[in-house]
Image (cartoon, rainbow, N blue to C red):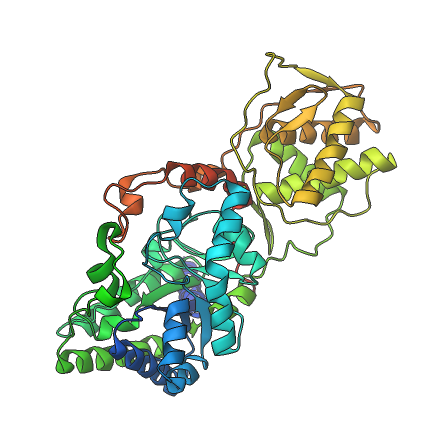
Length: 498
């Protein structure tokens, strides 16, 4: 009996030891990014250069998101040394003029989907092109100025060749880890996995290490993940933010009236740089910790659903899921959004309608969500069943719409009656499942109500969501958040690849 108990204790100790080793070896990625934005203060140029060179010296690459006007100012000032230092890191884009009015969310607050996409591109593409011309690279990532987030930016950013949305705010997110939304990898709303060491001297370094260790332990316990850390180069040299001094609460003075922000004493700046370098060295020394730029994250969280062949059993699984709940779903090594399921089920359904047989494989086409909230057609028709020929025509027509417009329709027409996309998807799922079970298409299709729940990950409009000091007093944007909920069709977890 004693030997049995001893063996049991040894086994339990070994298991605990193995769990500890697995936890310590779980990969944790630190993405360090800098909003490089102050184009008023020349001291900010030197701070950005010093940070870039310090990180290079320590073998760490970061992502510097540069404002278009900042890049142009560096060029006009002849600061090729700053540009060269930043180019050793990932270069992102942080809007064209940042805080000059109107800011992104302000000028998009009433815009529709297509109109907003075009307007963002009209106002912002020139800045991205200047980044490309001056730094010699297409910006890999974008993040909004302040909390001036808007969903219409996503398709425009894709048009501009930008692959990652890298920033921090509370508009949309999943479990404080990277996710896909709007057809892009998002490192956004990281909250509990966001770390910032204070730059105030004193106990700042100790506080930063403690905060990092807490998050590191939490991520290791869940099998790894990503930590987001951001700063602005101007934080090392200013006592107040450059834009709050000039553009506070909707102010928009001409350049001749721009004021310089207050400057920190040199000793404080030096201490902040020294603490930060030690903080970086500390993080780098931790077992299993790796620094990752936006480009690295795009590879680490690559969307493995793209280019994958989905067979009949995959389609039937999605068909059954769509009848229960319309949201994202995680599989082994990849995830599918509600929009992905819409694409695959519609594609398979259209192939079945045209070929009278199940397709051997169906491939995913990326879709944006609907552009407006569903409005029932006039006349009060609300059928509980549809004849198969009418529903088959609707499937074929929906497939054609998706291929032409690259998004989910706002409404699906079945004869003279329209239904919302969620009802269409649930109804289609039931029809495909029934066809598989019987071996033939049904004579008529029962209408199913779709339960669209993906929008639970999108924030409600509130003053707190738009609390950036640059916004006009009382600013909020319910229309933007309505569009954001519609685009939650595209939302899904980002799966960390081995």
